[in-house]
Length: 311
Image (cartoon, one colour):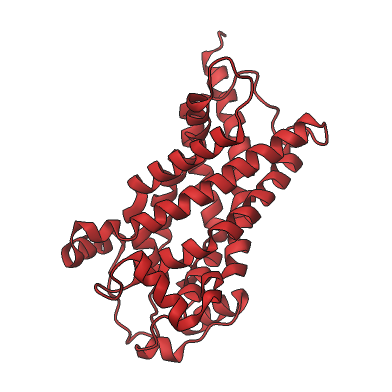
């Protein structure tokens, strides 16, 4: 057995909720530079009007990160990390921590197994719920990741994370903090289905056919497969979401307008800009998150059982 032994008592909803948020924050700490590189590659070519955009060109994942470090300093790949962690604690706790509970709610009484349709419905539900709560944190995160600061003379639009929330609300209205909610709900419903359902099914089949036991190798393989599926199906929506949320007021009338302008100006391949960092990020993120999540659930249940057991 690799890792902690599964608990005899199924984890509670509270344990899943806390464990998912904590595991997602840990995964974000490890993979945040890849996410920032993905955002920079996705918006490249969108607006060449600014001097910073004309002077800075990115090539590939590693090249993007190295260019950022060279031109903006070693901390630049972690721009927006605070908002990113705030996002994960609210976002992942709901979409991952509540997935099993919602899946059980949709499963007909007396049924031993949940159908694929039930799992997809549960993934869509928790994904949409999570976006509705965490959208402002995602908007602020993307704004920080997309902003280019070349040297000490370059002005910063936001002095900090809380200032970003206040500035966006003041300049664009409270609705500005929920900018891009529709494409984000679409994107995260797709991502959540791809991640949770794929992870659920791969793990279930590996255990049912006795290919692996419920331990780290099983969690690793299931998480890697989930990350790949999520990247393939969600990349087009992710690019539209990133560009729309980062755009200045009035640049696009709607997410659909953003999508149509992308196709007209850059062609359909624009939908898969940043695919490699997206896959590297989602693959690594899923492995780190799900492996940590499974171990945290077991550790938290062990602690809870120890506290409840008589001395």
